[in-house]
Amino acid sequence: MSKPIKENKISKEEVISKIKDILSDQLGVDIKKITLDSNLVEDLGMDSFKAVEIIFQIKEHFEIQLPERDFLNKISKVREIVNYVWKGKKAKK
Image 1 (tube, rainbow, N blue to C red):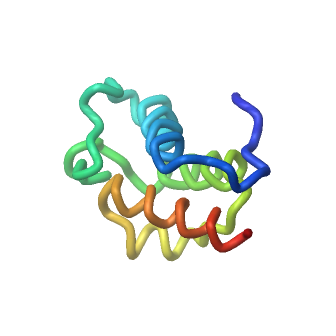
Image 2: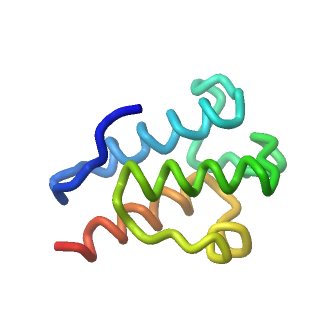
């Protein structure tokens, strides 16, 4: 696993790339098939067990708070994860 990103000097493209890496690894989906508009459940096959591991990896890598309830109830697309992480990193400045 790569080192956590502690500084706030990260581009949105880097966030997108790492989120796709995490999703590809955890869900066994070819990274080329993951788009910002991919639905986590319908397109990528995420279930609640996989969601917990994805949440853990995102929290650990980006060092942000990501409540499971928010992730499971409010986030359905890859774009929404990226925006959540991006806002979380910017808020830490």
